[in-house]
Length: 387
Ligand SMILES: [Mn+2]
Image (cartoon, rainbow, N blue to C red; front, side, top):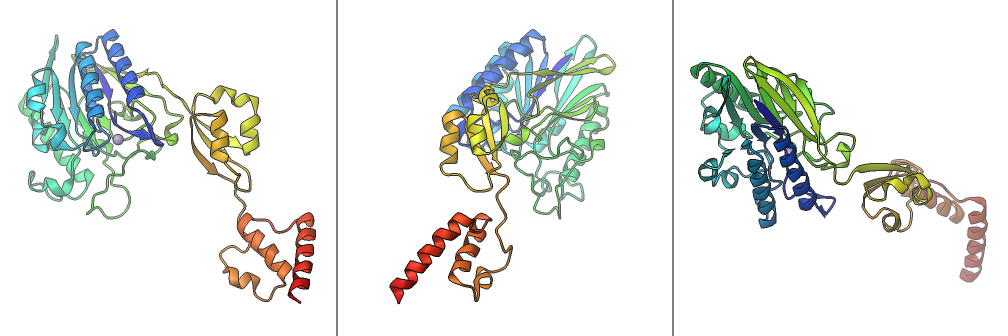
């Protein structure tokens, strides 16, 4: 059996204010073609299918067309709700759409109702674990304690293993949307932190060992691909959602099972519609350097090394890089005087010294000799007028 593992589509997301619906639909179309060419039997989408709990009509349109293309490519589809999705809305038509081979898992009660597929070697049970909120779970599951993601996932997996045993064991796939300890590169900027109100201190991480006992765990939530164990992986998002993901490829895992279990997992790249690049230099260097010509169609993040803020920097950058989306000054001069109050710095000083201190405070450098001559002159004239 061949399985394609994807997650975090975030349909409806914007990138620095720019819509991503069209490029995302392109990538998801390519995913459907890839899945058809690879003769995939099952596609799993591990949460955060939408970016919002109330997706727009346009976002719903992209989602529907993308699912239709995947089904027309052949495989069954199992998808779960992530922390961005509204379980109620996403699950509202799940009974109806399951008849078309798209299985939507949004409620914790569904954890022990696998979607079962068959190949020549027998059944494969596919368990969806939607994003779990421990505080809300206490009314569903009696397990104690139930305060953290680790508690919630451990209990869900205990139920999965028990259900699997009751069905006579065999091969199994589990989808989960959570933060597992050891994920590469830690968290990306674009992931909304999973915050459990009762979890005290730090990020609430689930141990990899929570996924013992299943053939493959298809994880969602982390936006770059990551391998935690041979059978426990994140696929990452199909589009880049923040500059912090710039070096991470986009695509999905192709997971192969034979009669004995997991035989092979390979990465398959998908096209990146608009690459991301971070360019570092002074504003003038970025505007002039011929080697940057290659990046005029990329999403650009400018790391300006000028010690002073530059006039109209974003507009000037966008005249060369139309998709410049972010600008940071990475070498602004530290203000003279540090944390000391300005009043303290200028107390008892001459007018010339006050001007010198003020400039040092706002731009990091005081008067240069030319400026000093001008200010001297102005102050001398001002003195005459007053007297
Ligand atoms: Mn996500």
